[in-house]
Length: 124
Image (cartoon, rainbow, N blue to C red):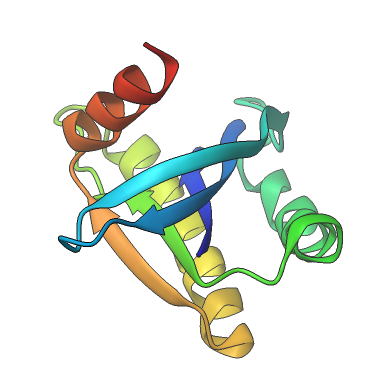
């Protein structure tokens, strides 16, 4: 199973592509990290600039490393006293969700701590 893992942000987008195996007991184990990078997609001076860059980035990732069986993203945040940032991150997640629906890819949301635990376990 190939999973596109995203840490959404309007300025920087965290990307990891992992291959996952299921054990005999149904437990999922990361077999390999295929690709990992942080992509600059916007800036605080022009927060909506990511809109022009995000779709081509997703299409290139799919071309280079797909097809993807699933997308994993952090649970949508709400940052108190930073409503604008929360809205921009939700917008990024909306673009990803629409692209995934068009590609017929399942999206799973996970709490940030769950994703960090997996990364720590994989990277030791």
